[in-house]
Image (cartoon, rainbow, N blue to C red):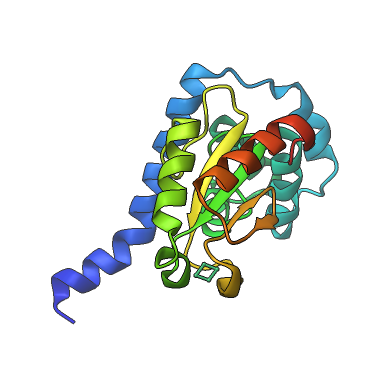
Length: 189
Ligand code: FES
């Protein structure tokens, strides 16, 4: 591989981390975060480096994401670098540095779904929610994501809402699934 490509590939995770942190800081410029819960959450964990993942999991559960302004406090508590906490928070998909919607909608972009109309389903959901994949609605009700394959190709096009799988969707089915979610389902965290 040419040297320039190797360097780009090596730097990619760091670039993604910086982008994630900037997005998180931008989001927090809009939404003030209540830090009052953090102290008791920190107190649940010994001040040791091997508790990064469990502590992040707890913060994610309570706040719905990892607020960027907590990263330094978590790092100081566990005696690790801020970069270490950020690295873990950006590596595992279970963690997010930006506020997530109460409901998570994930539309499959895989080939099997695509050839059966998955693109139209995604366009319909995008228009209905008014956000692009990776974004959260202004009311924080929904976060829209896409995935390469849900593993239910036989019933494509597929999307999941809070982990529940909806298959053989057309555009009106997708809209009904969102309406059902607003009406019936408890918020996921
Ligand atoms: S391609 Fe959509 S579930 Fe597999």
